[in-house]
Every structure is written in structure tokens, then in C-alpha cells.
Length: 308
Image (cartoon, rainbow, N blue to C red):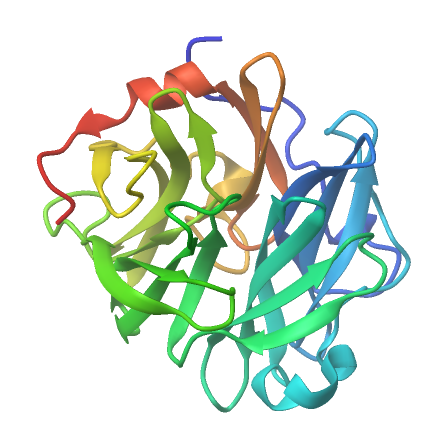
């Protein structure tokens, strides 16, 4: 495999595959758990409020959605005020034997990044908001670096503008030393708004991750996927960034839906043979699969001279 390939029978999940009534299923965090593929999917209910539901697979392609959501605004106990309008766009990172889930809590307080943890995806401990509003698109590195946990997120400037920032923490709760990681590039495909997509994975050349870029044309926004390479020992240092997107909305299931012209990933799973399964949504209306290799993604990281 020398490039990124869409699964021929995309989408792999739609609202029709959910055993309870929803408007849509999309934007899933992804992880291997007990030798199975697990997607933690955002489902929008008829009320318009989103919750998170699990879907399981033996092969990473054919998934079965559980009968009810596992994370809802109502089960957030003392943190309900931050999520009463919904839970959105989870990303999953394993550190040791604990699985950390970063997701957006949406409420009258505006979007904030929420953190929960679990060891079995049945019982969850909610650690509360770990950013101030307006912030979202957060991913967590899977190990400590230089004695700290590291997080990438996207504090929003306006509805249509935002850059990617990085910060660190001694305990996953108190975050500081923020700095801008990469900025929008006005003339290119990621010229209006950018945000992290998938949690970083360690490679021989550095930390590899996907990010999304938005460009506004007239009254429409186009969401595409790019790739970033960060220094292994100093993740605030950018080594490479794709000058062209690796995935753009081209297929009907990516161009037509609740939000047209969107490809958006919040989860991927690296395999032992060097391939990667990328789970993404088309037009905020489904879950799709694309497959590529670590080598191909690294080849798409054009060198950069600095991180700004």
C-alpha cells in the first residue's frame, strides 16, 4: 500500500445500524480493547443532544452498535452543567492500563474539553473540564514526556478561526505552559480553522498525528485531513506538516449529509504490520474507514523550519 485507500463499502456505520432512534452516528474515538476493535461513537438523538455509544468488531470493519449509550449528559453527576447540551467527538488514549477519553462538553457555558477515564469501558470516572471555554479538539499523548503529560487542543478565536495549541500537566488535571503549535495558513487548504484529529502515535521519526483543516469558500466550509510530525522528546517542536491534504471530501457520502463537504477523524488504530485504520465521518452523517501505512503518512510530512 503506497497511499491512503477508502474502504470500498463505505460507510461502515450509519443511523440505520443503531438499534435505537438517532438522527446520525459519526466522529468515533477508536482503540483496541481485549483483542477487539472498539469505536466510541457520537450519536445525535432526535432531540438534537449527542451522547456516546460503543460499537464492537472482530475485524475492524464490521461493527455492531450497543443497545444504549454508555456516556450521556445525565450520567455526568456533578459535571452536568458543562454537558447538558451534549457530548461530542471523543478521542481515546491508553496510558498504562487506563483509557483516557477526551471529548467536548457542550452547554450554555460554550464548548469545553472534558476528561474521563476507565479500565473496562463499563464504569467511568469523570474528572471534569480540563480547559476553559471555548476549546475543543483535544488529544492526549500516550506517555509522559520529560516528566509531564501533554495535551493538544484548539482554543477558538472566532466561530471561523482557530489554531492548534499544546500544553502540559503534572497530573492530567492542572494544565499550563501553553504555546501555539501550528497556525492556519491563509492561502492553503487549512487557511481558516485547524484542530487535532487523532491522538499521536510514536514512530521512529517522531510523534505522528492527523489534524483537520477548514477552508471557507463563500458560505460553505470544507473540512479536510492533514498530517503532523512532532519531535519525540519535545512535542512542541514541529518537524513536518502536509502541504496538501491526505483526505478530502470527494465521495457522495462525504459531500452530502448534515454538514456537507466534511471528512473528519477522531480515531485511528495502528496495526502490527505498519498499516493504520483511520475511522472518519463523512458530512457529519456516518462512520467510514480508510487504510494507509505509517510510512505513507510520514512521506506526506513536508519539513518545516519552525513550529509557527
